[in-house]
Picture (cartoon, rainbow, N blue to C red):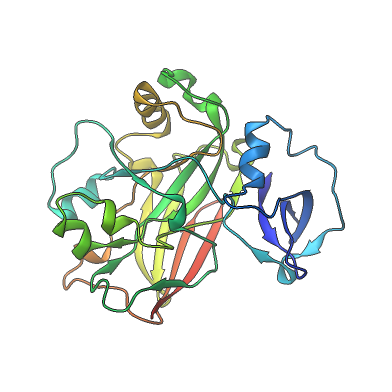
Length: 282
């Protein structure tokens, strides 16, 4: 199953299954601050594959595909989780998953413009990532049971203002500009995606491939990450875990390459789909 949130031409937002190039609405989202229809359905344990349609299927060309989740309680990112990425950054291999957070205001839709305040950064970078969406509460879960808590997978771009990231001595500001976490285009459930550790992960800037890696090269795999995080915090339905990026980020290139106004960034995860976001400095 593929499922996400879409906005219709009348402005309403629905949770919709993606079937044969159409959006099949299954629930209407409330028009409220931090409303998140898909998160709420996941938390309720609803069988989303069996929910009856609440309206006719609509061609994807006639809706706006939104971020699959509007307000997850947590967006946890894992840094330095690919050995080749560690080498290009010149940083040390972490002895355990290196976690940091993005907040819900960083979320952007899969085809949204990412608008960055003019002068806020001169070193805007991309990071193509597989993201995991939690389906059941997880607290102190052993690795061999961790996958039971996965609802599905999506693609993420962990955009980073490197100058802000490294100027502060910690990463929060540089990772948390508005729109710095494009997500989508939908969530794919495990039964459809299969093994999440054999997927190609790519990034393109202006049509040129800049990252071309595979999730098989992750240092800490999905069960290890979930198990580790759940030792210290409860992972809740709808929480997102971005699992790290392979080599090829702008910071690691020679010469370094930074995103500029008008650049189109595409993030592709095999079996899921492609984010396509245009950077705007304004």
